[in-house]
Amino acid sequence: MYTFPNKLRNLAIAFMVIGFLGLAYGFIKAPKTIEEAKAMVASSHGEGHGESHDETTTTNHGEEDTHAVSESHETSEVDDHASSSHQETHDASHDEHLFHQLSNKPWAAFYVAAFFFFMISLGVLAFYAIQRAAQAGWSPVLYRVMEGITAYMLPGGIVIIVILALSGMHLNHLFIWMDPEVVAHDELIAGKTGYLNVPFFLVRAVLFLLGWTTYRYFSRKFSLAQDQSDNISNHKKNFRISAAFLVFFIYSESVMSWDWIMSIDPHWFSTLFGWYVFASMIVSGVTTIALITIYLKSKGYLEFVNDSHIHDLGKFMFGFSVFWTYLWFSQFMLIWYSNIPEEVTYFMTRIEDYNLPFFGMVVMNFIFPLLILMNSDYKRINYFIVMTGIVVILGHYMDVYNMIMPSAVGDQWFIGVAEIGGFLFFLGLFIFIVFSELTKAPLFAKGDPFMGESERFHY
View 1 (tube, rainbow, N blue to C red):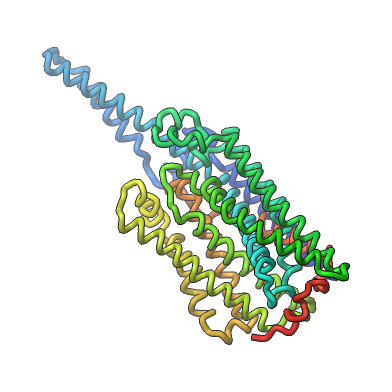
View 2 (view 1 turned 90 degrees about the vertical axis):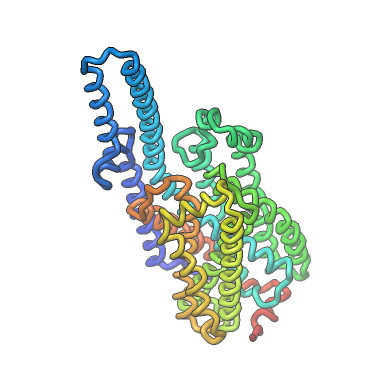
């Protein structure tokens, strides 16, 4: 049986405490009024745009004081007044938009980290179900590691649904379609209200989480029961529910990606987006399996896992990284080639305002793992897997960051205390839940009928 080391437990708690303080600082520093938001931007970017407006107003008043009574001049004054009024309306709208972006920043940092670690758990669940449905012979030695990682899914999913519910209560402006005033003045969003409305949105979220966690509960139950059974009936049950779950997962994961991420920018859509999010979650999940497996082996556990298992995990890391890149390029290339204004704005925003994180994640998620993991021998060396795994995990955090932040905060982004705090908080929570779950059952699933094949696996 695995024992949760005190050092690792204390490290997880320290991450949570430091992360919580970082998030709290982000919320405290967020502007509470439009004037505070304008002051924050002025202090970081110099003089604001308000001075030009003041100059225009002063000029207009000066014109009114001159002795001009001709009809043409009166008409000019009316035009100037209308122009000034229009400018004031524009400035007020801009200032309100800026305020929403800056007040969204800690919420967005919180949401990015919450979704990223939940995504890892859900990706591992999908990979686990694939292994069960395929009746794979190489992977049963890793089942308990996968089951431990998926334990995070329920608490992580609850956190996300709470954030979504708070958004529906207008405590933030992450989802602009939840604002009745925006809907009233936006014909495109108004046309989507049959689908994008808060009650239906939350019902979908709850149903999807229930479906995922229900499969995880019964699969884990059958897996543990198989260890005590003298037949393979529980294994067969696991096979059947895994095959059924994958059908539900493909549908629910796609809709979840539209709801939880793509609807942050309701004016834009991509038919590839569900697959793109899936690719990110599956490669993050497999990478996490590899990192935890190598850690447990370094502590004297999982002695039945050999370098061929690590090699196969490295192959999946490599393969899914290429798959992610294929979808990233396909989505980018098709939208760029078609050059439809409603579509290209998504990438224009990211290329212009998020140039470093946008292209940096391509280096971290494709070029780096490609160069390291292309060599078959390197996939058997723990050092290379760990080094690549850390880069890939951070790279896919940046992927989620790029999916959410531009639509939530515009060009007012910065990886600061709130972003680092959010990542550390959920990292600590993830470690605490996963490694606590690993202590609840033997790491060797002795009852699985393919366990002998898995122990003898050699590539």
